[in-house]
Image 1 (spheres, rainbow, N blue to C red):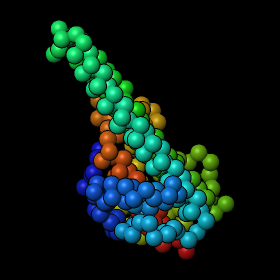
Image 2 (image 1 turned 90 degrees about the vertical axis):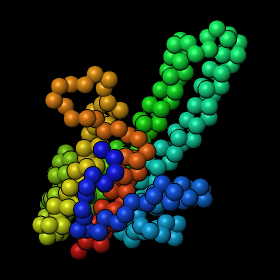
Image 3 (image 1 turned 60 degrees about the vertical axis):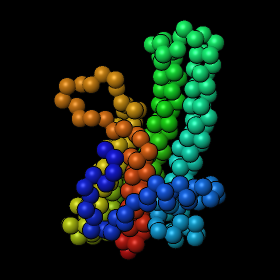
Length: 231
């Protein structure tokens, strides 16, 4: 479920930042409380993109989510090098192991543990972003419309009804939200998926880098649009 899934938005879902744009922004070592700004507009690093306090709190949660994923990514790269170096040393010490299935298994198991951690961290960041958006939505609802345990979709729909969004725009926003919601549910219920497919089940979300960036972009775009749409 990576990419934009054919999403055609009437609420101006801008093009997602390219991998190069994201890498360039993060390579400049932004402050921890600016890390998510790449997902809020075309000019990250120029100050907080939000005015209302509810959205400023939301931005902080998004930055924490990005910090988490980046911390694991930074730790994973040298760890992967260490796995490869250990396999190389083993080959040098025991030449008879070179090219063996046993050595390949040692290498693949070591890399799999690290790569699973990377995927789990991205999934946790996506889950945090979805939870931050749901919390933001609940904070914006008038007291008489608040209902505990409504979930992201229902809470957001109640907010859209209160704002009075036209049906076409509402459908596009909800479609974007539901992509985020499905990914959040996938992670919450099955982490990175099961090794044993169940008959009739759809493919599980793969929390690769593209899916992570797309999810964060969707959440950020919805939040920016939402602040502008509020009365």
